Length: 303
Image (cartoon, rainbow, N blue to C red; front, side):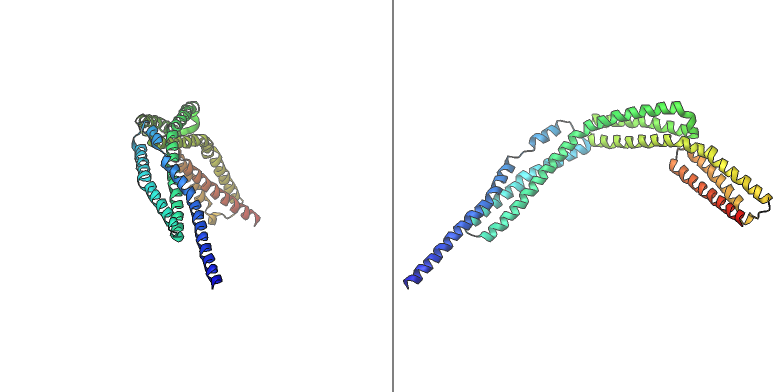
């Protein structure tokens, strides 16, 4: 009986020791979270937000600032308070040997800490991006002014190469000036994000115009020389084959050629507005028809 009693006492004592060992391990799991919580309590975005406010922002930038300020207040007054309360409860559960509940709270607290850190990092990143907008805008503006002047010089020097599109290109270039002024106004009033959108739109317009001015002279050569020459060559070949007795009326070559000439005149109209995409599409269609006619004529000569 004595041995049984001693055995039971040893079991109970072993269980108690095991519980205390497990409790210490759970407290060790909790300790890093308490350290991270203390670090978060010392974390501050106030200085970063003050620097943004000092930029005298307006428009979309001001709305961004308001969101950051609101989110930072929420992190401080709600999330960190909730974290502090949860960690206190976790410690209480551990002391009461309620390890299952403590584990749940510890896991949720870890997720909350990660979420808070991500939100703070996101705000910091967005603040950094906003602070970089104005100098980036300035750099882009300076690049665009150089391109703008270059386009003016290009138009003056090669105006004769642009045909009827020269007037449209001149209008496009002139329209850039008030847009550049609008960018300056947006910048001076603290609307840096709107200014960024404006300068990027201008940049896109300039590069599009530059590309059209580079491509058009070659397209004009095709419209006025290459394509008409091919049409005339085919016409002469058709006349020659018909004189030799070839029956070609069923191929409707005359109708196809006349339609190509009509398309060519349409391309000339597109030149006036500098519509490069339409011109290229029309010329591709004409060349396809001319290739088809040439192929049909070759087949007839083999028969």
